[in-house]
Amino acid sequence: MAAESVYKIVELVGTSEVSWEDAAKKAVETASKSLRELRIAEITQQDLKVENGKVTAFRVRIKLSFKYES
Image (cartoon, rainbow, N blue to C red; front, side, top):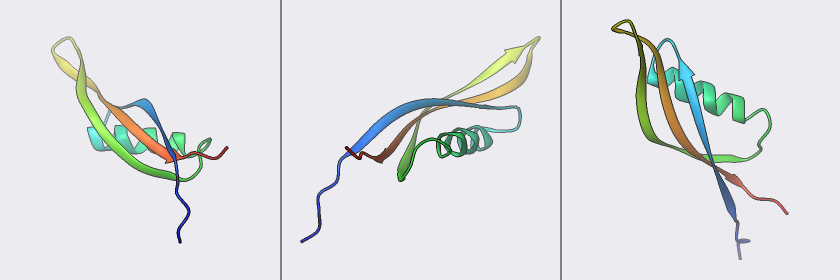
């Protein structure tokens, strides 16, 4: 019988000057430096930073789950 698992969810905001995909990748890669057993990353919001009529940054809000260890 498999052991049951519990997962914790944290919310992150990633930014990039390149793309939303790059912003998400940076957020997950940064989180992986301090969190173990990452499972699912769900993008919940995307937006752009605009300055002087030009897009200067892509931002994503992510819910990231990881296995909870007590």
